[in-house]
Image (cartoon, rainbow, N blue to C red; front, side, top):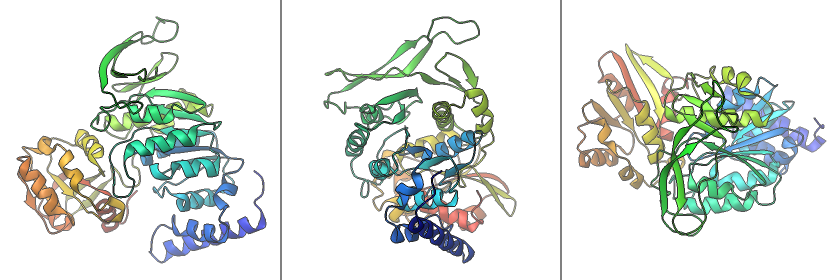
Length: 429
């Protein structure tokens, strides 16, 4: 890699020092303050740190931290990888990530949806990964159709290779201006934000279609399947692009029609979808499935997600859900036989507006013990009451956990509530 100019070297070094001091004093993991210090000294530091690296940017409303981790794990088969493993997904976090691994030839950066156009322009990344768009923190990020439009403008005229979820109409529209796109059928369980065509505003029809691999029938390969995620506009020509990668229950079908079982450690359909996207991205870097897949199996927890913490004989599995689509994915992972603790805050990183709670169908929680905690527990309690879900209020997560009998319990929390729980247990990763 090209050596950084002296000013950038100094800014990078001082940023790393600030990050180290932050960790040493218990103020945080240093992934934001280090980047802020570096950018204050050299405003163009992100561009300089990104030069000469093979860089992938990962953006979505849900799953970007996990997918970033999976892609990073896969690419470590090729060499050192710089990444923002703890989810600091704005420019300061990107500077910290690249600065802390300044000699890594590869980089995989999670990017906030709102900041993606800026980071594309600054880094000149060659690979962009786009997975889903749904309502999230609208008091901060705004209308998601506007985000998709900003993605389109940012990708137009860029020499980038986009890996995009063909099953999400907003993602397909946002990615369609890119010079090259690899389309992945990763599914879209949450459809409430994409019933209308982003191109013309007309209604979208959704139906199944048949898939036949290139070359037709090949011995030992899948020859056809029904793609339940097909969609097309009723009033214009905009329709689902033809995918070359497919999620097929517990397996991935690659562009050659080969079926690979996704026996990964992370639970749920959403993580299998994340794995398909990760494998498609790894192949873009020249890493075939047979080498990437074993690396994906090594990932067991992502920034505390899916970690089990223990206290007084109680084993709590931590699940993160920040918006309606995320809650739908968390419900898919729940053990139906266990009690569940729900914790919701409404601090800045969560979004102040909790009206999105009414978009979540909580009826799936009926028939099990449900405990409600967090700063906005009364908002959530009202929503559960309307849904006919019996619950018990707790003044804190600690109180809710202490009310459980010894054994297993599932915990679903939004962002700051999740981080508070992690801090209580030593920020297990």
